[in-house]
Image (cartoon, rainbow, N blue to C red; front, top):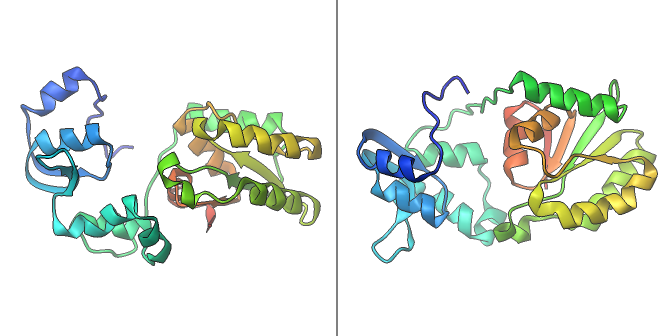
Length: 231
């Protein structure tokens, strides 16, 4: 993204560097203990999001981040929440929600990857619906049953005449293999579960519609201005 001035890897050198530099604002919405610990150590005048307390347990830096914290850890809250992820994040930063949009900038090599995928699978000129089958393991309750995705893919292909493609990442390899065993005989294609996140985003960008649970794919699809259906 052109909005990023510096991109630092999560490594030992970065850990040392970030404990020396001082910042005006810090935002962290990752509950991973290592990331939350680093966010706690970094010196900043104002902090939003999550860190760790003296017992090593997750905490919020500011009261405005309470809802996004509950969204991360409570399935019941996610089920009843009526706000979009974008609204939750902006309000957690102490900002006002004005229906701002997320902007995702794709690199040319990633666009070419998606174009090659479309050409290889003869998808050019067809209506394509991306079915994102996964979610993070800790949010297993958000995952739609794989047999439902299989049924939906079959109906899209045979009854509506559109081209569904199965989308997943490394954590979905088992259910992806299961789904493709049922769908490949019908000519339904799937992405490579080992592709990079930028390549995955480029695949999403080519879809006319994306169907997904509340995951990276859903957020990214909205940022790419894809028509999106959240399950």
